[in-house]
Length: 403
Image (cartoon, rainbow, N blue to C red; front, side):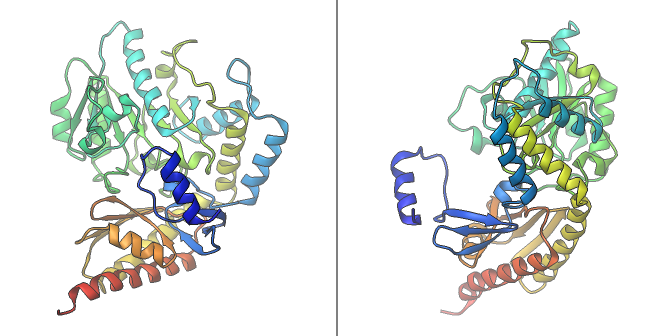
């Protein structure tokens, strides 16, 4: 089916919930995607930071095929060996003690919110309020939407669940002032994703941890996008010398197979008892085998460390590009989470890059986001920067030319 037919069927039969680019993909390999007309694209968005091993990685593909031939699903009415092994891997590689599996980042964050409230109820305390950050993004369920302090996502869905108090990100004074008797937890992204890849100052998260400790609050870290090696370490909290009480994961965990996880310390996780929470598909054999293939391959190939090295190289190349294009106002990154701020609307640059065979996206009106697979090489980074260079020249130079 060609692109035009796909677009027509999409417009006729699917709900209008996405603003889709006019391209449809048929296959992929490594950092490359091939559209239905056979044109190659360098994929520097990786399914929104999902395809950590790129496309059609032989280990992940073989693992999924083998498991599909054995068993897809049994439900959590029974023991699931693959789920137990994945839980073991995540606990042994993190500062948390127990795992709960679901299907997405939104579900993982929903579980974290429920666990935080159940923890206090189990202690006979009615604390329920959760402090969150402006410009955050935690998901699109009603509760996670309420926690997502961005009006553009919340508009039209009132009334949202109560109990979320937004404060400015990276402002410890504002956070301290928001703590009240009913405050149960603080919930933050380590790096704000949809907020434009905003990184906290070095002292912020340690100060948040201190405020939580002094007030007896739980610290929930949303690592849906930053976890599983993307920032150059297994989890982004490791860069800041702290540990959370609850952590959420998804995106890169399954390499493209839907899977989410919520991890917690023993003391906090014990608040959940049978029947308190669940997910029919959560942690099924197929999803867990895929996730195991991803994390074990990342570990075997040393890809978190490689993400740090290639990411630093990428930032250097983009900063060199900024010296040739004044429209670039800032470049920032941590591992293979990289952002470029522009002095103009970013949508045109996204389109110009796609037309030249590079896939990126815009997370804020003037911010470009790059989240390539963790297998990306310096040579592929050079290709991406060359395309971005040409795209910016094509947009800016005609606009600057005299009439």
